[in-house]
Length: 502
Image (cartoon, rainbow, N blue to C red; front, side, top):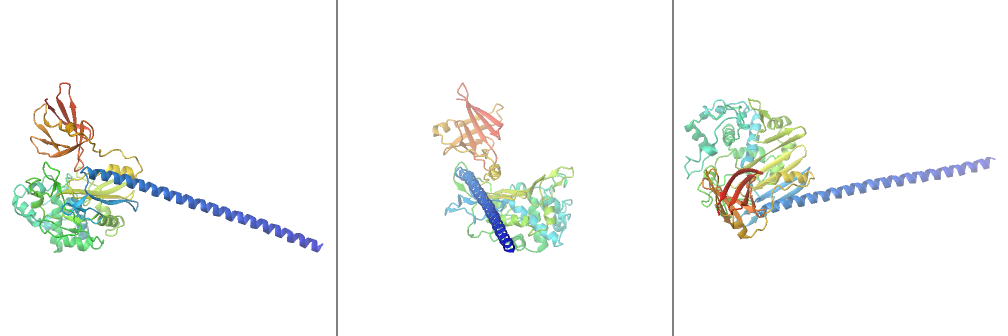
């Protein structure tokens, strides 16, 4: 009986162990299969995401390539979405003489995008205890004591009411000289202009604000504006290709530097702003030595380092950055969507900042969306170049882009030239003059030499090149009596018209 029981127990134990091992093996196999499933799913998701990113890159590149072919974009750009580089590319030439191409190492003048670095220097001086935002302008530049109510804070946010030197200086300035910040100060010391409005009662963008802030930086530190920014911002952030540079006041031979170009009048030749073929206006030449509101030069990759430093509080504390990007109000209670050298967009689940710039043949856009972790940087060296921001947002958001910039079509020369002529408005206050230039129509008026170029998008509609981003369309209609009616539209709205008799 004992042997029988022992054998029974042994058999039972063997069967139990076998069953247990089988269950264990089945569970192990199932776990492996589940793990393999999730691995395959993750790989598929990664492949799908990569495929989607590649498609988005192709869409973005297609739009900028089209704009470059239509003389609407010439420069370098960097688009980054959640840390992933979507497009990092140059379009067109950085200099026409040697025909060197733009790329991610090309250095551009930032124009008004320079203001954020001026503001950053002021924040650092505040941290060092060398100034307060409520300090009066006259404390540091006593020669301008007649602007006694203006504070540093007012200048940072463009609520000062100061006059703008960009408009005031050119008419009377010696055309053989290049003005500096000190010249600007002495210019207003002699004129003693009154403020255009009471400080903080309005927000009005003004270049004088940031030029005077640059002068305060220099007087407080005993260093040039360029040196202070280099030592306290550019070097610490390893922005190796960023510097302050006035290319006419102190010309240098710089590697990878982009020359800023504009159209020669009534021509598709590109020239620098001071070229007589462009105009007799020497403003950009005469004001070349004034820093603070412009004159920082950089690359797309260096600007990306700057934006990441702001995001990660590398240079500024969270508290300092909060003050820099605060949406404040005028004394009348109106929102001021401008921080310290930055345009600000804030709201429910919305926080983005950046700036645009246009000066001397350069156009710049710096944009960062804190919520979506989205960076868009475009630096151009051809007049006021276009920026298809709406299409970029739509593509990155996975939406079908709605046409923002229309594509040029091939239209016979004779079909274009039939619209040449003078178009008189019903009021006869002005006459619109349409001429032909190398496949384009050029619009001027008797009162203003606009020199605007339009390319065909249909048999009777011509789209403006949109330098500077302003939408413009010329629409022609042949009437029953043979007269041709001209309608000028901006963003679909009629802004002018005229009639050409046959």
